[in-house]
Length: 445
Figure 1: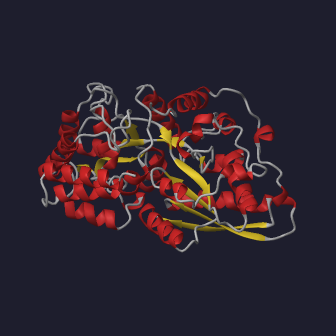
Figure 2: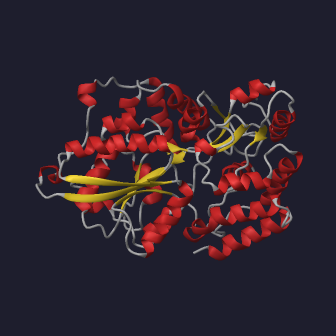
């Protein structure tokens, strides 16, 4: 049985698009609780850790400053890093029993922490943390066997294909019609950019993690890296399907539709921030991204970009695109200040002014009151992101199914290693696909 988050995503994108319910600034300034922590004279300090770009860090610090004004007895120490460094840092901190009091998490990585007892059951701090404005299915993938809740959704998003209209224009290549284009059209478009004498750019910036493109490819074939519906297999994808993707990706590389593997590896090793990406430097026309990061990429590039549907959506067995709960807020199980941490999470989750500062940087808010309040505020990149969310929801694709916990701990790294072994010529697509599936199945719990 598939777990559903799609209904809430559709409902909220409709709210934001239509601007359902009029909220005045006075009425919507804050929906935070007046917790005991705000009235206490005891001074406490909590650590808050997240990953992301410099632009996200600036917005997040503005929210922290506003929180500290409202709750002067709570000091928030920010800890931020790139995604690659973040995952390693959290793992190291967890080993030392020194996780931050509040942290951003994302599936499937958070399952190792929740299943391992490192995250607080948020139902135990309900006096400080109000979850009543969240739809029930916002917690589907972060709920324990006995009803424990380990995370609060910061937004719904998905992976998408970003295109740079400036590069297309410079190269004299027409923008794709993403309502009909195929993977062959995608290949031809990428090659046309790379081969254009009018510009110095490649068609596609390589996704060294490969998951962002590999997953929709598998979903379009009716398969998934999640468990099979009948529970008979921890990974419901065939080696042939993965091999076909690796073969296609290798062809793009060999044809010159992408940058060279060595250049891709250099960018990837440097942290792969928006500012460092080829697409933001107008040196690539297309790139797979977490779709809510369109604003970061536009800010880095200095001009508008566009999110489009994956190639092959109208010709495939089923659509590959999907919207799901994205980033979560979690609290360290062994925090010395659970009430203060919960007060901060409540502010981040329920305060409309805080949401206005962040915009849709982490996705469409799962909190229905916050979503409604933001409905009239959306412009620029946030509006373009919402348009993409609405279009993706219209595909009626199968919703996300939680990965097996063991598979989740190795999936991204294992897929990346297998992909890189192919594009660097160290393994055939068939060998890499079989090796990947063997590693995933061996890791299943």
